[in-house]
Length: 122
Image (cartoon, rainbow, N blue to C red; front, side, top):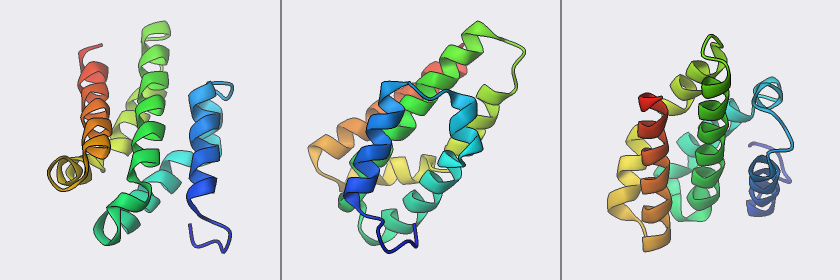
């Protein structure tokens, strides 16, 4: 964000990388992906949520699943809870997307909220 070459294509690439799961959760944290996603979400959810929210929601959903898998594998790891807490700042934005967006974005927001619930139950 704030970079002249930042656009929807950049988010599509990040989405594909995260969805491929070739990069682990620790590496995503080192690259500050969650902080950047939160920043983008905060910036665009108020001005133009239709522009990139679908990509952001898929990225967050995948990251939450990575955190849940790590939590299952290593219950003593603090990383999954850090990820959960870091992404939870977007919960209010998810609620807004549920009520003010087109069907595909509402569906993605619903799935992401379910991922939060799933993580809490592990």
